[in-house]
Amino acid sequence: MDIWTSVADVVILLFVALFLGVVSERLKQNALIGYLLAGLLLGPAGTGWVQSVKEVRTLAELGVALLLFTIGTEFSLKRLKELGRIATAGGTLQVLLTGVSVALISAWLGLPIPESVAVGAVISVSSTTVVLRVLLDRAELDSAHGRNALGILLLQDLAIVPLVLLISVLGKGSKSWASLGQMGLRLSAGAVVIGAIYLAGRRFYPHLLKFASTQSNRELPVILSVAICLGTTYASHAVGLSPMLGAFAGGMLIAESPFAEQVRADIGALRAVFVTLFFTSAGMLAAMPSGTGLLNLALLVMAVLVIKAFLGGVVVRLFHPSNRVAVATGLVLAQIGEFSFVLLQAGFQEGVISDGTFRMVQAASVTTLLATPYL
Image (cartoon, rainbow, N blue to C red; front, side):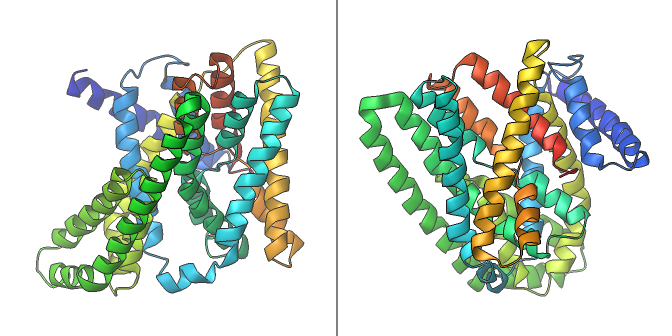
């Protein structure tokens, strides 16, 4: 596709997202609702005006990386350690309980066992991008439920690799041991990359930032910050881990330095544009059913929200004495996340997830993202 056609599509998306975002704000709703609706309206399932879906998704991923990077600049290693068991044990329990529960219900409803397990894996993951964006807008990222949600979301991002490989095992059958070995290699490589990022952050990055900040050209710190963000994001992707984890780790490198606030301010506007593209691209993925399919979608969405909110609240309650905080965290994590699209695609390509299930769960994912600001 011609590059200028893609540019025209991006311009249309941004203008419609701007208009619907303003309308949402005027109606006392979150602007994210307008952005998602813009993608739904202009995408293949709507008017079909925007054809450059793949190109827009690529730009959108840059926005997600910048969002996680700037959030990482607010979390030093010391603050991350304070998340404690809720991020490790709590996050692991949430993924396992949700995945197993959904798999059992799916099997009871008549889906084949491999497909049921794959659907459980897809629905167990929540949306890091949407949740953190809403918490930032509401100044609740540093609240008790905000910190709990962040810890569990980071664990979920780590879980993407074993979940993708689980789906691969379900599809390959006899080659499952090779897939398990591949998972071990990827996780080992990921540990090496995260360690290298940490060492670079302690030894080199502070000096580079100091040098760039002392120059008369104000563009240099911005260029360096974006280079760090994209570099750590790619390093994480290259070893098969979630790119968002690399972006967050890159932000944490700067959190320890005195330039963190300046970096957040410098790349804030750039982040806003690309993140808006992410939400519109998420809206474009949906293909809403009609007739009885719409009723089935509504029932699926309600079931997902109730199950995930309940199980998330139960898990948090094991680590936090407040019922209010547990319920709030469960509601925050009740949606199906953007990485579920990756898991869905993997399941579909492996022949584990059928076409009908693929379309229904995809539509449910976008619908739960629309519900997240209200939750």
